[in-house]
Image (cartoon, rainbow, N blue to C red):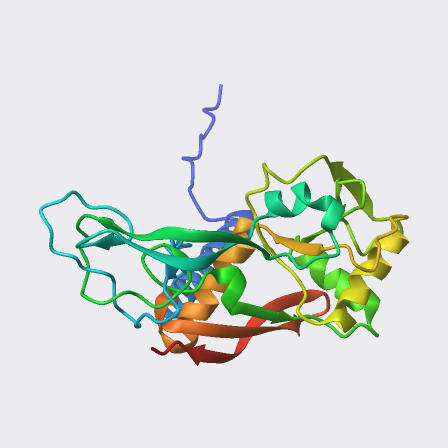
Length: 297
């Protein structure tokens, strides 16, 4: 029987192996190129802009109309520290001015009168025996605080003209500002979603729980725009009814920061700050400081 010749196995690279190796090499090359491009982009990109941390600025407005900027009352005395400190008790004839939303709502029967109601108090105590830690002279301002004019008295904001009522309404909604009107029956009407076809109306019996900063118009011409917006919501506001703008805390903080950044002055050094509303993009708005008056003695 003839012997069968068994050939030894031969290892060689086939065309299939060559094709697979080429595909793998191409894939690894593309992957390495992508990694290199990504690394180059990451190492050359600009650092992100530092975001400003929102800071809530607290103020203690107050002082005297004949006071001085950057000053606070100092009275050296062994007595405890009190407000309106004086070496000896003094009295004087003065007019006490009370201004608050609660006062306005309580005096709804006299809504036609100015918001600042004056009451004759006769002889009143303007100095109490005690001490006060300060820099020296009395501070410039109004009220019982350390010094400075309150925000609602030193800020003036200009919105869109009355002829552009829709634009004005959109600006109010953008900043989430609510309108308020004191009605003859003593209720306080709030208006929100002002730019919609039918603004939302809420009523409150009084404003004693209202803590937001509010402002009123200084010119009667612009007040007519608010009356028209209330009329669109079906609320009849008499010509002599007080109208308020209620600002949310975040917008108030934004205005305070803009005021501080404009000239770098402290709040007690500012007498007036004038803002305008500018358009940003297609439907955005922002406040901009256009003028500022420095407080003086």
